[in-house]
Image (cartoon, rainbow, N blue to C red; front, side, top):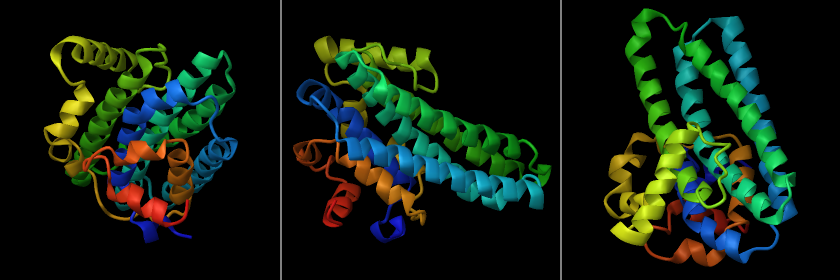
Amino acid sequence: MSSQRFGLSAKSLAELALVVSQSAPGILDGTKTLPSESVRGFWQSNRLLQKRWMNDLDAGTSARSGEIESLERLAPRVFASEILVRTFSTLLAAFDHRLGTDDLTRVARNVVSGLLQIRMKTLSQLLVVPEIDHDRVLKIDRLRRRCDRWTDLLIGTIASTDNCFEFAIDPDRARDFGEESVFAETEYGPRPFENLVSAGLRGTFLQHLSNQCFDEPEFLILTKSILACVPRQALHRDGSFRTLLERRIYASGR
């Protein structure tokens, strides 16, 4: 079944990462175990996606080095996946930290390591794109930098309590976001991500992500696996939390 049927896109993956980040305290404090089938689905869907993308990248290299059209299709998928995968992996690492185990962290490392290989190969192919397509490369790179910063913001709000910054793009930046979150929560008002939600999240970040539907069926497995670890009530706090993604995934009969 294609993820396209449920409208999964770069924007919906980022929204789900936000849900994971905001739900993390409740999951960590109130859950003793995560569904094993969800963790397995998280791993399997990522490995299948990575195999698919590596084949696409290899085909592009052999056909014509730096083919910009294929990179414009692939790069948003890779960068948006990193937001979600690295955020959820940080939750898994924090869960392990509290239990004194490392099983979930090893799964997360395997997934993030594979995704990092895809990321590096994508960036290396962008470097050899002909000069005529320079502006298109810059647009892709701007998206990468926005996604990297968003990833570290979401990770920082999870990782600060358990010091689990392994999966951040820039651990120092994520740590700074985490420290700001602690101070903001206790002294200055809402945390940074709460400010982003209430003061125009879609205007500051999500507007830069495409609503174009992804057709890879693995995305549906990935999002379902992660949503199964999120308490249902966390998806219905308020209007901003109830994204189109959650409604569609739950309607599919999770």
